Length: 518
View (cartoon, rainbow, N blue to C red):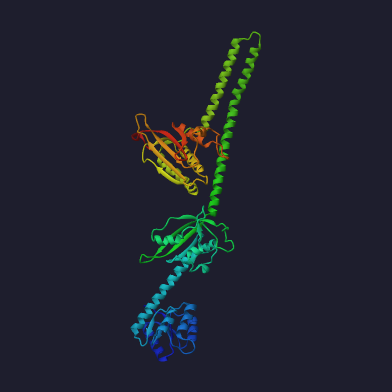
């Protein structure tokens, strides 16, 4: 047992001297002795002992229990009470000071040794626990997410600064109140009241409920909270039960994040991406128009010149038909050359596969859905997939095929944006036809539950510059069909049952025995 610095508070001098001698034999240091509570408080403040042995009955107006309470509150020094008797009221009062032990007079040295050792050990453990709690509280206070801890009855025991700012309650005001009083969450869209998430976690035990989006309402009658408007703020909630050493639910911890800034950033990013895409399309169209104007200008001028010459020949009384025929042939040749120029530039704009290789379409679909996961979640769209695993593969440009899938998925998301659509579902399936000597085909089907398309519009959708969107350019589906056709396949659209639309494309594949991804 390590040596400790001990203060003795005992009004019987003989008993005090005997205790001092016993402590010396144990190897402890006595920093002072006192016979009154007032003097004990002064000596405790001056010497800061490791332990105080406190007699309950003392000289003067202050007894040992009151002196112990003040020493504990001011200096957090552990107390061991010394008493020759202990009725119920005395024990009750003494217990309120959270003593570290009792010694009933008369006591033997082994008893004192054991009680002192246990008191010092318990105090050291309490110091470590308090330090751990301070680190834990400081950590929670410094994070930006709101954190609320509840006990097993769902009552608030702790709130960090972020939680105070978002709820409008201070930790002191909320302490002991039901969580549902302090944290009022409603459905993000309907504003219908939601079940207390902590209560759900307490019921679920170790199985934490999934995170959810909700709207946190500000404290009723309180000034507007920082960042929380009168209509509330959209948050993401996560909650877990706190399990004690016996496996019982001892409480719950609720963590919630303000999504306002995150959504603003995401929206700004989406607008920037849309602007870039718009600029890109305009740039491509401008470059295409410039190239066509530059390259076609010469054959067109030749056509105009030859047509003028032809008219001159025909205006004569006796036209030279041989010469006229030669001029017309030149006109036809120049017109064909102009067409060849247009087709050449068109092929350039369509971009033939720049880096062909073997592509696993099912894996590519999974990767594409991962890219638009945030868009799907924001739009509250349920995704279903039924994808074949393994070969056959498609031989083509992975980037172009992914752009094709992105166009179809984004079209589906936009088709389900109408607020009246309750069941928003995106289903993507793949299946392969048996490969013959010339290879087989893989079919990809993208189905949504959106506003749908009319049967008569199924082909019109793929026309360049045709769009039903106020700010659309009508290039997405046209480019998608070009990509499919470039890879030797076909793309079609039609209405889904009972509602929505279906886009389906078929691509040629090689037999599994000859396939191998690069």
